Length: 142
Image (cartoon, rainbow, N blue to C red; front, side, top):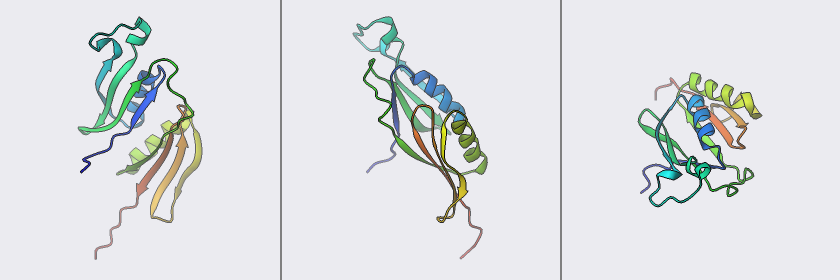
């Protein structure tokens, strides 16, 4: 049984920049950062050595996303990843939308949906496709 699936982002030398950006977007913390030069037997150049091998972004002690750089030229920005993120508060939903859309492209602005949620879709400046969702909380008791 799968406990959790954690999206893994790969970059061509931009992992640290992306990690810092998403830390702000999701008001999270960086809990682990490992670099290529830390690998046993690393024999690459200094530029490769400073790339991120693995990093974790967490919130409330739960992993949100993992990050890594690849060897130069191995990542194609055309390989987009679409992520659906369900929020529990309107403040977090709006915060993420504002920061993602600031340097990204809004494909669907915040709107009420037929499934009873607020929804927006943004492609950020790293070509990541974000589907932001905030379910309406029902106060009706059965």
